[in-house]
Length: 123
Ligand SMILES: [Zn+2]
Image 1 (cartoon, rainbow, N blue to C red):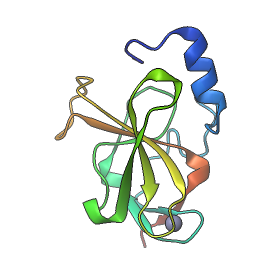
Image 2: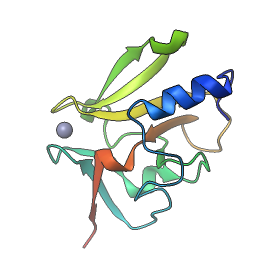
Image 3: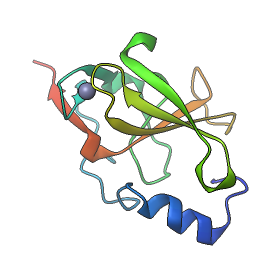
């Protein structure tokens, strides 16, 4: 699932500011609503953009709107990844991966930390 990442790098990558796989509050959440930035309340993802990636983190195939998130090239650990941040306050959300073969409309996986978000349930 993690492509060419070696086990040791995986450990480093995931321990550097990422919650442990499968432990996040919203990992398996199906509640309808909008996921907001935990820091500033900016709307980031909708529950109907969330899918079961089985990667251990909440995963979305698209953001609520492209303008709501910010993309930063992350070249740490000798590999290139794309970091996802809140476009309003710049808080770290997670990373986006593409071409993994998930059966979603975009073939993108926004792999987001539960601790970075807050779910506002639909009425
Ligand atoms: Zn924010």
